Amino acid sequence: MRFEVKIEVLPREGIANPEGSTIERTLPALGFETTGDVRVGKIIRLQVEADSADAAKATVEDMCNRFLSNPVIEDAIVEVLTT
Amino acid sequence: MSRRVGVIRFPGTNCEFDTRDAINELGGEAKILWHSDTDLGDVDAIVIPGGFAHGDYLRCGAIARFSPIMDAVSTFARNGGPVLGICNGFQVLTEAGLLPGALQKNVGLKFLCRMEQIQFVSTANVVGLGASKGDLLDIPINHFEGNYVCAKETLDQLEEENRIVFRYTDNPNGSMGDIAGISNQSGNVVGMMPHPERATSMLLGSNDGASLLQSLLFTGRAAST
Image 1 (cartoon, chains in turn brown, red):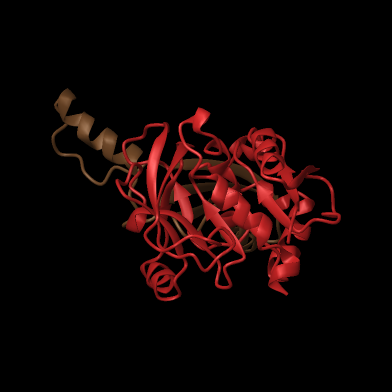
Image 2 (tube, chains in turn yellow, blue):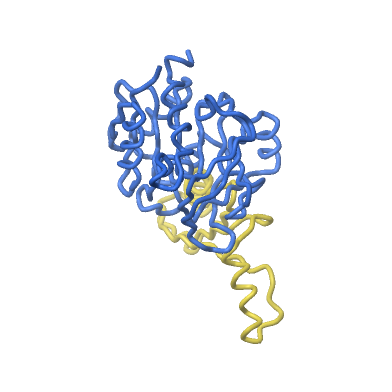
């Protein structure tokens, strides 16, 4: 089966995210005073052939650990969108 | 003495000729090696120069480690061969797992292109020959992602093992511990954000980079075995 998978790559908690903090500092200028913990990352979408959603997720998590994200500075959140 | 230096060129590398010319000027014999080569040939040292290898897609240096030549570079490094990664080359070395940590965007989100003062913290590596701990050098930086980061335990380990090669005297990019360059455990692999090849003549504002490249020439594979 073919699964559509979404991967969110975000800077790890505790790792400075200059883009996020710049946005965070800017939002109050528009009156948004209550925001916090803004982090900017990227989304990768791909399709993968697998026997089950769990297997698809496991395969993509392996890709994340080895290539799609850098575990030193980034977390990857994998979500299987279609089953 | 080591004189033959392979300068790796990926699609998107842009400092290979400056690096080659600087090495040749210092009496070395630099040759450019294309990323799809699988053999380093008869070289005594390797430089991975600056630029934007493979467009820096995904992350800086992330795709470069899949270039065929990187297998040979890894083997060369693991066998004690001197390897210097400059700027993007440093990023490639971290992504390839030859050096720990990662380089992320500068604090302040500015591309920085200017002279920086750095200080030798450890000279027990391939760029430290003839240098003393505490020596101050003026060497330019030219990067957007030069903000070194690693796990706290890794930082402790780098300090304990005397592997922080350079610190900035006035941290320009938010780099952890003011780190401008580090080495691997045995000191034969060094990564640094500043560009020594751009500081090899007073016409360029500084020749402090010349001694680092000279050190690389003199601490070749032959010398280390």
